[in-house]
Length: 337
Image (cartoon, rainbow, N blue to C red):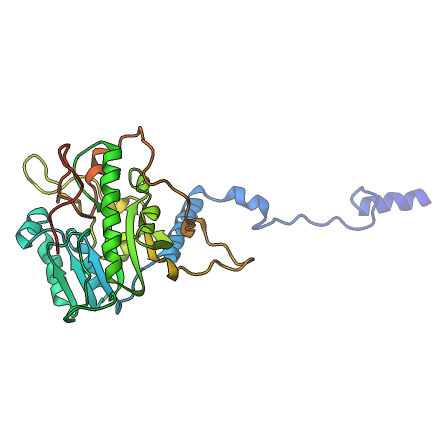
């Protein structure tokens, strides 16, 4: 009798000796196994979306519209035009190395539209013949007479480069270092209390060999932070080469690479006494992309066997030199303020 009861119990329990009915299997949605059934196209879209969201989160404008801004080595003035026309900057001084409109237009035939936008904006002006190593100190538009302290809240120098076609890496590095040392010294004279100097460079050799952090120390400046330069934040901006537009054999404008497509970083320099105190212990560490601890670097970089691309010798928007040949004695021009 007892055997029959056990047999009945086994049948009811699914043959496992238990009187409990066997649970019906459920399909798990969103569990660990679900990830294997995702479409590869869905993963790609998600990655692109996350990358776009990250770029938007990292977007930095190193100025506000009502600050007093000095732009150095403005090339074709597309950056200055964007600040005046799109961002509504009201205290803007844009400077170029070229001595007059004729010389500037010869290098950048499209510059007239950018000049018109700057001229049309209240409180904005354009100055010709300004050498970054000999400039200033500058005051706001409409201010007359000498001042005892600088008046520029932000001084911005995008993609400085002496120009030229030399492929001697060490020579190019030395010329550009000398130019930047001179620029920092002169820019400091125009800098307002608690103001900052912003310099943007490509994130590749030979620019990384310039050791820009160390160069600024000679003028009592230090890096406060750095951030990714995002051209999309400046509608109408186009990267312009030091020697002007690229022309083909027929003399037509066009071709060549686009500087806006290359990774670049902006460095924000302030007077050493204005550098914020280091964060307290236990505070959140910044992301690696925005981390900017000064490292010990030599005065001049070691010899590099890597030769930059020919475009790298003259691919910058703003500069101090029209040409650097093998006979040049330095990387400077005679242009002044």
